[in-house]
Image (cartoon, rainbow, N blue to C red; front, side):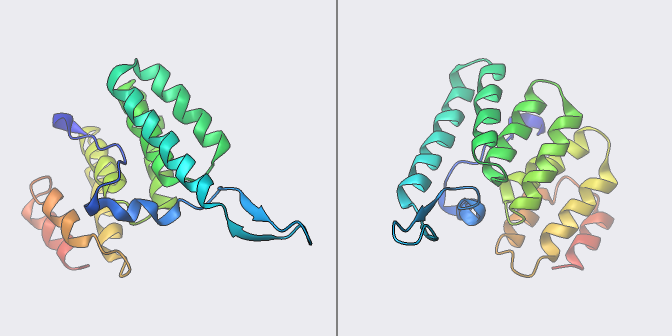
Length: 174
């Protein structure tokens, strides 16, 4: 997250993978007849997306603490959402709590393993805290996932962060 490259999980065409986990924790529709869940409320997903986007806007014009408080509340309401967890990790980093930032970014990646934003944020933070072996492991795990469509983008973003030997190790897993 050096050089102001911190990535809040905003929806952009290259980051469509962020929506992979976004139905987790979203209320489901209950059929009035049998009280059984049968579908996800699309309106709830739209509302969650708007709430996350509102939180990301808070980061631009409010103190870090206020934005962090907002995302922590969202995390209580919608646990296990990779996008929310990534944003908490970014805000923890901005507030100087590196250990919590790393924990939240790892947790975010656990719930959304194809998140290019989260993986890059975590790698940057680990490199900034002299944890290059852990950063290398995150990069290798990310590109090793055969279902991950963002391997090439990851390589483009990290090629200058690692030594040629480390890049060679990562390339072996592509």
